[in-house]
Image (cartoon, rainbow, N blue to C red; front, top):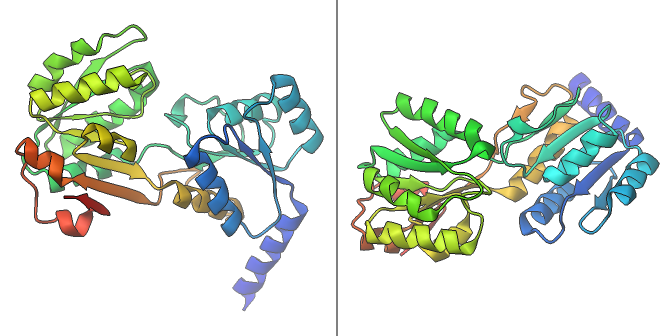
Length: 288
């Protein structure tokens, strides 16, 4: 009874807090999914600020006028403005590539955009048992992600072969990497996936070399990805809501709690990839 009373009192105290959800771009589906699920889960009233078409001056005025106690910033743009104008507040974030690059604030919390690399690699090893080398194109944006992959890959007997790209990189440079690895992993790097032409070329080359591609978003299925491992964005919205409510967070920055695993069995069969029997119990969706 005492514990329930304390929890109730704490939740009631949130009514005195001004919580603001800042959406970097309401045209992005995953951002809106996070907002929607946050609203279903968070126990107290809150306000939203869509900065899709707002100028810096308008955003600054809105933040100072509102001056919230707690901010939930969805996307890098929202976080950057919160950091710039109200860094003294509690700032939670999600949907940001490589959060370790963010400028820090005294009270920084959030859910990373990337799944735990060790978990992803174990899934890959479980589903595609013949995979021993994974090629990973990356840039300075995802150096931390690559470092985590290399560290965790060694522990389970997988070798990561990486190639660094820049703003002017030629996708033809990935051909050698495709030939040297068993599979290629496309991570959420803005330079690697900078346009459709690059993506189409990489997937076409992978088919010629009969190499499967592992990606981070279901949209890559249409290009021929054999496996997609992605964070579940509605779950992230609920996760942030729970973090704000919980005064005793075990970790300030958490990995996504929900995962979607799509196996493109049809595509993988074309290039002769062997599946583990565990595929049926592990995958959330199988494309025959």
